[in-house]
Image 1 (cartoon, each protein chain N blue to C red):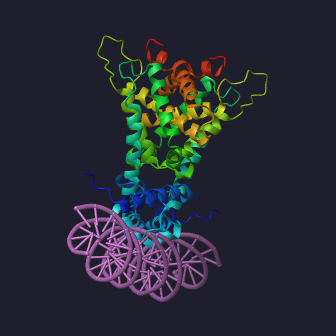
Image 2: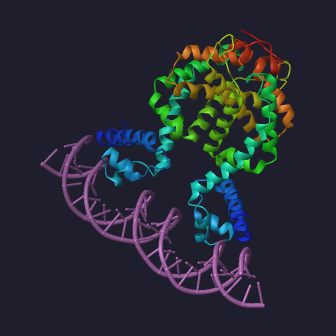
Image 3: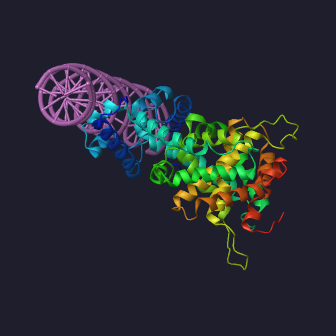
Amino acid sequence: MDKKTDLRVLRTKQSIRKAFFELIQEKGYEAITIQDIADRAMINRNTFYLHYQNKPDLLDICMEELLSELKKAIVLCPIHMNPFSISRLETVMQAILDHISGNISFYYAMLIDENRIYPFRAKMEKIMKDKLNEGWNPAQGDPPLAISKDLLLEYLVSSFMGVIVWWIKNEMPLPAGEVASQFSNIVAYGHWKAAGIAIEE
Amino acid sequence: MDKKTDLRVLRTKQSIRKAFFELIQEKGYEAITIQDIADRAMINRNTFYLHYQNKPDLLDICMEELLSELKKAIVLCPIHMNPFSISRLETVMQAILDHISGNISFYYAMLIDENRIYPFRAKMEKIMKDKLNEGWNPAQGDPPLAISKDLLLEYLVSSFMGVIVWWIKNEMPLPAGEVASQFSNIVAYGHWKAAGIAIEE
DNA sequence: ATAAATAATGAACTTCATGTTGTTTATTTA
DNA sequence: TAAATAAACAACATGAAGTTCATTATTTAT
């Protein structure tokens, strides 16, 4: 027996979320007041407090919901490969981009322009780092990395996020599969080769 | 004749800035009140309003000051080269890292952990994009890029920022020159070659 | 169908930070 | 030493946050 079967609750929560995301895009997170949310959602301001403690609480819960979806979307990606292998990168990136394109308005509000919710970006980066790091066990007679693994992860995830933001901001000009493939190429072979620029030292 | 020769003004402004940066690191930007700043700077709350309109105004002015220093630091880097050339990347990155290490506590407060002031990061990225883009004139019989220039810039700047953040957070474990060189290598030849990992398709 | 439980409303209230105004005191510059 | 300016001090208006409580509406269980 689910405790939350009352339709009133679902309806109210849903309209609060909807109002919240609209307002983020319109005026940015900081400028939003609880009254704004209540007006937009057409509920009493008091009702808001029956469901959320405050504005940061609402934000946290919205973020966690989205990110647990993201985690679900990438949990199936294979982990037996070298975490820095090209096929793994490509697979993970494709899964993430597919998930994003299915929830584009949320991600737009969270990541693009003035609306940006930066803790959301940080949380996404954390999830991607954990995934790429998964199953990585360097004590297997492999030669040690010439550069720090942390640095490599930071580099991969940052550039990854950059491409994601570019993709969303430009209204997804390429299919997810192609972005994933191009990105893997850039990152694996360097941007000159990927871009077709002759290397000059 | 400089209008701002009154030592009282300089002293007050200076202690406001100092208090502000300390508080950002202690409790984060959002949680700071004007009263907090006034207490820490040992001035009357009213005096704050004699110098700054409000908290965002103070933040903006602090950011602009730092970033104009950053711009000055990289304005001398040569612009005659291909903006994506390895030597140019390395030169610009070195200049930026040198500037950062000379103002490390400011950049720490702006970029690291919960303190992060994300608009600052966005402004930094803008400056770097503009610099890398400078003098780029593709209509010279060069073969067209195989991938979007915007994407390439986004990718370069994002990964660049990632490395910068890593470097600051880890208390600058390598000299600026080495980071710049390693980064250029990763980005130019791909991370496997740079890290010494054998490529597996 | 009706009663009990729960959700939402509406109003009143406290608290707190913001930003402003006006007066007084201290310090600097001319 | 006088005029100008900065800082301190006090008082005030405003607006949002968050709480409390009584009332109304809606849902669920009997």
